[in-house]
Length: 114
Length: 114
Figure 1 (cartoon, chains in turn yellow, brown):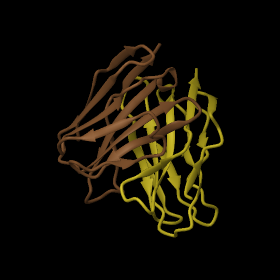
Figure 2 (cartoon, chains in turn brown, green):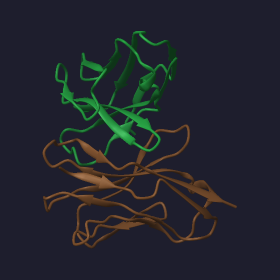
Figure 3 (cartoon, chains in turn orange, brown):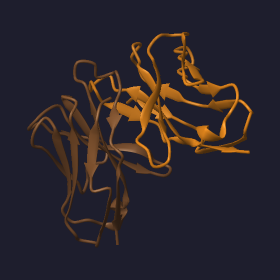
Figure 4 (tube, chains in turn blue, cyan):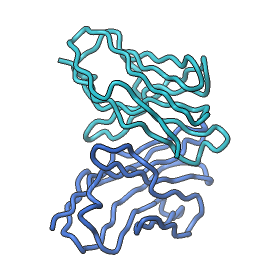
């Protein structure tokens, strides 16, 4: 079945360094919808980015990601980390069989140090 | 902005206790979901619903019941709570017309089962 893998459980970076959070997915369907959700402490998780277009960069709030269907990847990147980026980040795949159901990865906790 | 309200925000119960978590959305969304969030596991879907009276089983349903009484209200029931159900629970909703758009999450209910 469909699945999403986020290899890193915790990523710790110094402020100002680039961010890259890995996300790979598995699905036999070509029309995959991929999402990044962000969960700041004491807030609700919310959508950060989404894409269904192959090789098209999508950007929001300084973050960007490009869906690469050839490698089944949707990595989240930012050029320069800020302290306020510390949060839990989830990659998710829309379930082809069940409209409206998302398959979430295990999540990556991003911790930015001064 | 879509609104999803969960209650209570915090709940402590004992093993074997009976707990009901409530969720209300005022966005006219058809889809509603219950997730639990645990370190190392990310967001896992417990139950979800396409509309009033409808119930779908998620990925980790054991020990949980759910009921969708109206389009607005979705309840999660733990009839014999166990310590393994200690977790942070999130309710979410989405628009059936655009199920691949985004989920709107509540602020979460922290449940401790002693």
